[in-house]
Length: 128
Image (cartoon, rainbow, N blue to C red):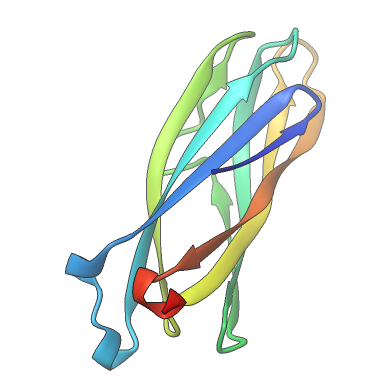
């Protein structure tokens, strides 16, 4: 698990290779990642947008941007958390992701960029 904190917002990421949805012979490796967002600040915040950078070992780079996460724009009061699971496919079986969330303080509308720490995705058999 990797964790980062930006302005009192803690983001943790856990990854898992999904062999049942992958086809290594066709260069298709599927991973899931579970994100936990914890509001350790004094303010209620709302997640507005996400911006991901996805880098495959083959040097293939992709960016994904959009509103919310998995169709939601969660509001987190101080001390609360939000979890979700999403996925990513790679061609090489080894890659990394990182990015940012655009958050808004509900009280005054101030926006802040919260860092999603860099995490790796490695198919277990690639480590041999």
